[in-house]
Length: 330
Image (cartoon, rainbow, N blue to C red; front, side, top):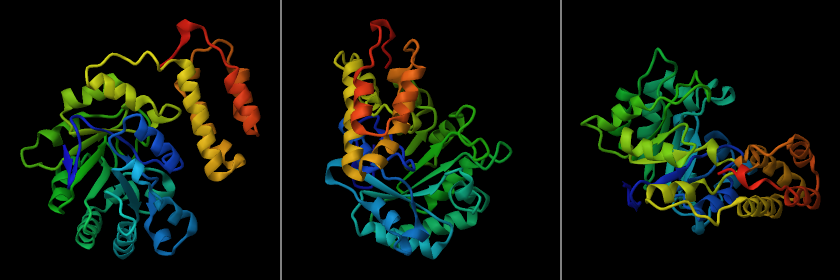
């Protein structure tokens, strides 16, 4: 599979762009464990044009994580074009346009998946950004605004006509947010469409190697994108990659190995943004990590882990967690 000049091996697996999650430290971990491509947190075009420091900081990328995409969102054509030019100057491998974020503060203002209610504007933004930059431009969107307006079939063709280099489709509508189950059949219909020739990346409910394989084998996508299943589990890329390549699970990836990865993630965050904020940033991953699921009487330990205020305290709690061998989780 290829996006512009970027060549991937068979069945590539991407890390989804996620606010407050896909910072550079987490991206580098996911890359190490086999992510074929990673994306930054999404970037507000208007904030970027205004040079808001916290937004500009999101543009920091490393050669070690390449290929890496920077995702921008907004509802104003001129702001999106100017933001794309600013982004191009830091040399990402591609620029992704977010037309899929469902949260109220984004979609409610007409950006993100709010664009699904204004297709002409979505297409105008896409065309103008593609014309303004020399790096590949891709789009991420959803099936439609709600179940009564599943428009992805026609929309995929329209976006392709804007000369985008790839399209990521999340198998939910905006009204679903992140509830229910992703519907991959409309994604499959786009993949089967005889006129579609750009790569189609499927997203939604990829939580296991088996789900990733099903996305390729049954729905025909060119790549899959993994989102929330990476929380506290950056090694999921190694698990998926080995499964797709016909390899057995790595026996070295036991509970102790995964615990050390989480401790490394904690250290990376603390080194990057300080002890207090680093701990806060790590809590989301500790709360969601599958390695702690199924441990008997774990609730008091979980509460202590999520209330710890110093690195020393948190490291001690995590280091003293023990599980019965039969309870180990993947």
